[in-house]
Length: 217
Length: 246
Image (cartoon, helix red, strand yellow):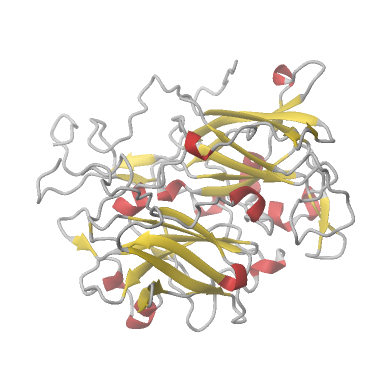
């Protein structure tokens, strides 16, 4: 594939392309450092996302039949309290040991067999459903632990960018989680899934009196 | 790997300035009215969950995913085009081995989807689905047909400019991007609230460039579109006097 780039700002891979943690590159630590390249703006996923984003194994953050598998379910509601039947919910989480299926986990990638940690679900009838394992606590980077949680992205027609939230679990100790401690009890309640027969359930309210807490990442 | 008490050094991802990002809501795009959250989002510092993300690559591909013009034993109708470019981060580094998922309308502006019922023909040889993975230099390329414009119900005589949907993961939760690529000089830009929701100074980054040098003689036109995801900065703690991570 013959390809020439003409921007002096573009670096090739044989230059410093090593962004893994622990590599000897000093950072300024200032997040307002100018970006060399401006990022591509987002757009809505639109109503026809099922054409491009449907996977047969989409709902499986873990291989079906894995010991300890649970279903994380919930309904997505709009500002009228109507269900949102054409959204997509994506989840990303650690395994029961609190490790991620990713090389950037400084402790090493998850060793849980069949664990992908990622799932995506359409919302027929407004409802998402993800097959997964309950995550373990995850280090907070400052010597403490975050309570078990799942990072969630919601995409839909009518959302020009994804919205991001988290799912926590009602039967865990949530008292010291560094994210939850900054929230009011009412806000916290929008992030806490309740146990069900086959897992946990948390509804997502895009708007309304019980609007879910969404995060800027 | 690490001691039990030493902090984990993780790369924070830079955030684009608010006036360079598409807002979640845009009143002229009516569907945002009841769907876009109304409360200010809470800042979430980047920790392990945010700086990791699903690793998806060649295993997500099927035969023919990089050529949308050949389906069901025949050729799709329409202008054949090659779409190519690089996936980079905001530091200018290539994003290698990255999955791109693509979907689009056919040449007549019709999607192969149950809720798209406007009276334009479906094409038996076009399903509008493509997938590719970037190479070691972040490059991607696929072959498709020029999508058509189509009407929608947002306002009187509303038409979407021709576009291709793109979905990318990068390598971290923070880099996730779903967007749309437009074609240069589209006369429908001015009346499209989805295009105009993009801040004015960022709109050109959503528009591909015609590239005569990459057209294939007697075969296909070519458009280049580079995609830029958020790049990293490392947190400065736990480095020694030489800047090495302790």
